[in-house]
Image (cartoon, rainbow, N blue to C red; front, side, top):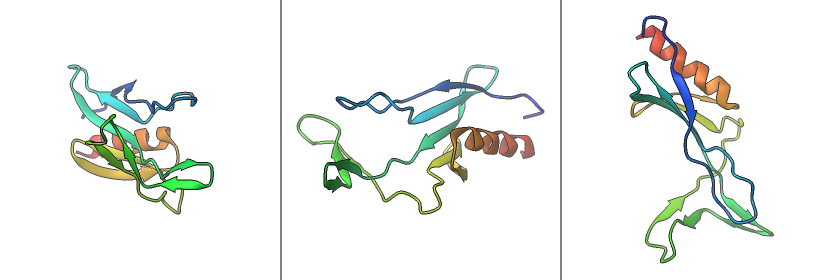
Amino acid sequence: MSGSRLHWKRGRQEERAGVSPRTLEWVGYNNAGEPVARVVRVQGPLSLGWRSFRAVARDETASVVELRPGCPPDGAGWLACVGPRVVGRAEQPLQAVRAVEATLEDE
């Protein structure tokens, strides 16, 4: 990418009643305004009291279900993606952003 950095904007946020929104995704745009990279949080199971759910309904009729795997044991819950390809994992979103930018520099 010849030394130019991406412009990062907040993407999707977690929406649940009674919970302050958490950022689930950062989107990296090139100078032309095209999305070329993403940093995505891997969400673990949903915990409500003593129960834990690995599948969560995304609509009222439960026709769309989101599967939630166990959290990574090393704490690297952010995926660094360039296009459809995962180029790294990180514990913090900024670390994943740097992994994306380093990958684009090498290409």
